[in-house]
Image (tube, rainbow over all chains, first blue to last red; front, side, top):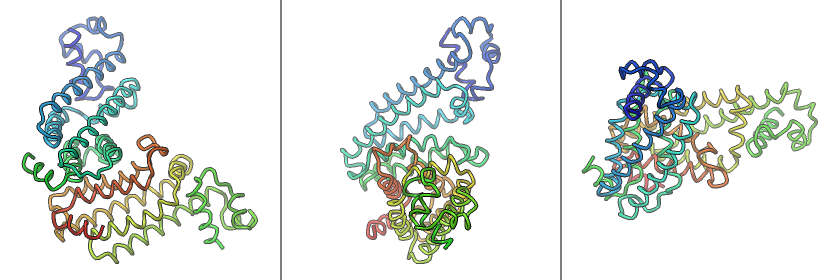
Amino acid sequence: MKERILEKAQELYLKLGFRRVTMDDIATELGMSKKTIYQHFADKNALVEECSSYFLNKEKCREQEVAEQANDPIEEIIMSTKMMREMLGTINPVAFHDLQKYYPKAWAQYLQHKSHFLEVVKNNLLKGIEKGLYRADLDIEILSRLRIESVDMAFNPDIFPEKKYRLLDIQLAFIDHFIRGIVTEKGLKAYEAIK
Amino acid sequence: MKERILEKAQELYLKLGFRRVTMDDIATELGMSKKTIYQHFADKNALVEECSSYFLNKEKCREQEVAEQANDPIEEIIMSTKMMREMLGTINPVAFHDLQKYYPKAWAQYLQHKSHFLEVVKNNLLKGIEKGLYRADLDIEILSRLRIESVDMAFNPDIFPEKKYRLLDIQLAFIDHFIRGIVTEKGLKAYEAIK
């Protein structure tokens, strides 16, 4: 039951924003009473926080799966991009701002997830250098930060007003540019072959 | 006289931060009385604002010179990088934060300058595509924003703590990565030849 609530809450929060969706909305959508939801979550804050950690944990698991399944670091990026492509289709950028503004604890979880993502990117860069797919002189510390921060940059409406840009287009352009900026000649061939 | 004050104020502000440097410091360094400074600038706010627009105007002129002198768009980026390299040696990142936090009018000037810089980058991308040095399928709107925002990102101490990273190293790594991410094979050869 708890998982059913989390799944539905996540769906609504990501689609409409954390602030706009009420406990009533979630109860109605699930066809259950609000009382049932409150049996599992003390209040909206608790639900938002559990929802975020539930979502981030799933992300983390998927990333690990991708890292294991991919044959090389470039394929790993392409597989994560595919995953992101599916996910972003369902996220309203408002959800991201809501979290940052109104749910500091959930936002802190996101920031922690970011430092995990930083490690994923660093590992990817290291593996790519080892395999001769990425340039050996990359500054891993600096470029991994550029990569993870540009994910957030794409969500920033002051830089990319939502009416003018599609979040997915921005993220895809960033990833494509990031890969091209780090590859060797061999890496570029591999990238263009599987892209 | 006014220009002499602006030059010295700029030097001190950039080296030590806008907040820390007092009118007394500037007077002492110039070997003149504070009264003389106040004859030209109503107060510190006025001096900071004039100083910022003085600095940004010089930047703008230099950028225009570079755009005219450069033989091609890649050379243009490399020449601006050289300029930036000299300039950054003299800027304390604190100066940047001070402006943003305590001098909103001067900061607004900086933001306006940023939108000018955006146009410079877009023009550079267009010229590079025309000359076959950059890939024809670049998303100019998105990548020009990535470029200018990454300049600010490098100044962000939450992302790049000053104790661990040198501002110049970050900017140089960003520029190198940016260029490699946009060039064609021909462009890459041109870049590596003049780098």
